[in-house]
Image (cartoon, rainbow, N blue to C red; front, side, top):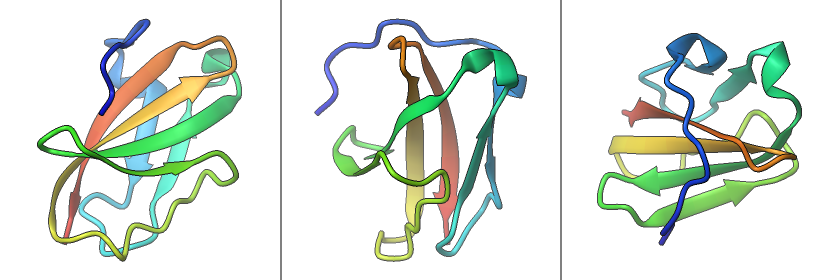
Length: 88
């Protein structure tokens, strides 16, 4: 369970996760000024951490059940971005 967030950017253009909705493979892109992605965490709509990726910007969420999920991206400085995706 994620209990604190350092900073969430309100600019929707800083983070793109597609395709949305998705059936499995997901591509995550951030704006250049955000810096390097340190981790990608995926949370259920109830706040449970479903997966974490530190090695790829294209997590495969095919094993997750259909529903709404939140993606939390953290850079090397601890700055975070958040968006939501729909898993079909």
